[in-house]
Image (cartoon, rainbow, N blue to C red; front, top):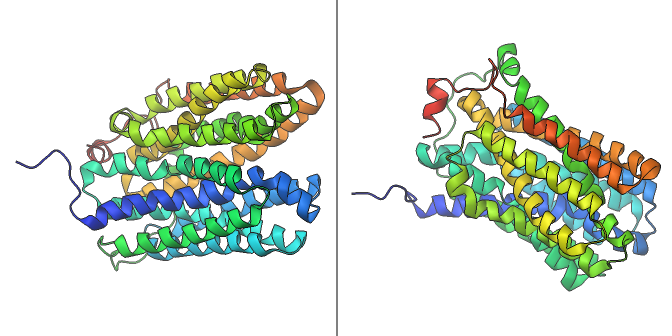
Length: 396
C-alpha cells in the first residue's frame, strides 16, 4: 500500500522548497525588509522620512500592479510570471545594494515590490499543476508560509550585518536568483492548454467573493499598525535596536510555524481558520499597543501575530479555492491586492491616530477592525460560504 502522501518525484519536493524560498525572498527579504533597514539607509543616504513614506506607498502600488498582472496571466503563463517575479525581486535588491543616492535607491525599492505581487499567483498555479490534487491545499499553505522564514532571515541578516545594509540587500538578491531558478527547473507540470484565453472572471465570480474581499480588506487594515509601528513602539519605549530587531525575528519565527501547523490547518474550513487567525491578529495588535513597555509580552505577541498573519493569508487561498478552484490564481491575486490596499489605508489611519492620540488608541482601533475581519468568517452567507461539489472535491 502507498502512504497517505508522498512526493511523486524529487522535482515536487524541490518545487515546494524553492517556492517557499521565493516567497521568503520576495516578501520577507525584500518587500517587508524595507522598514527593517530604513534607519541605516537614512543615515547613509540622507533619506528623509517623508520620502520614505512616498517610497513605501509607491512600493504598495507596484505590488498591486504585479499582483493584477498575475491575476490575469498566471493561470496560463505561470513560468513567465515566476521568471518576472525573480527578476523584479533580485534586480530591485541588487539595485538598492549599489544605489549611490536616494533617487536610484527609491526607484529600485519601489520596483522590487513587483516581485512579491507576481510570485504568489504564479506559485499557486505551479504548485497546483505539479502536486497530487489531494495534497495541493497543504502545500499551498507551506509555500505561502515562506514569508515567515524570510522575515526571520532578514532579521538575522540585520543582527549580523548592520550597519552594512548594502551587504544584506546583495545577499537577498543572490538568494532570490537561486530559488527562482530552482522553481523553474522543478516545474514538471502539464503545459496550459492551447484553447483561447478566457476572459476575466464573470460578475458572478466577484459577487461570490464579496465576503472574502471585505474580510481581506479589514485584515489588511487591522494588521497595519503592527507592520508599521511595532518597531517604533519598542524604540520609543527605550528598548534599543537589538530588541526591536529581535521582535522582527519573532514575527518571522511565528510565520514559519505555519509550515509545521499546516498538517492541521489544511483540514480546517477556510472560513473558520480565517476567523481564528483574524481574531488573533486583533488580540495581539491590542497587546502590542497597550503593552509597549513590556518587551517580553510584545515578543510573545509578535510570534503569535506572525503565525496568525501568515496562516490567515493561507486561509484566503483556501477560501477562494472553495469558491472557484479553477481560478485559484486569479482569486489569490485579487485577495492579496485587497489585503495590501487595506494595509495602506490602515497605515495612514494608524499614523494619524498615533500623532493625535498615541500608540494605545491607534493599536486598539486596528484591533477593532481586525475583530471585524474575524467576524466575516463566522457568519454564513449565500455567496462564497460553502463550496460547490467541484470545489469541495479539490480540497480533499
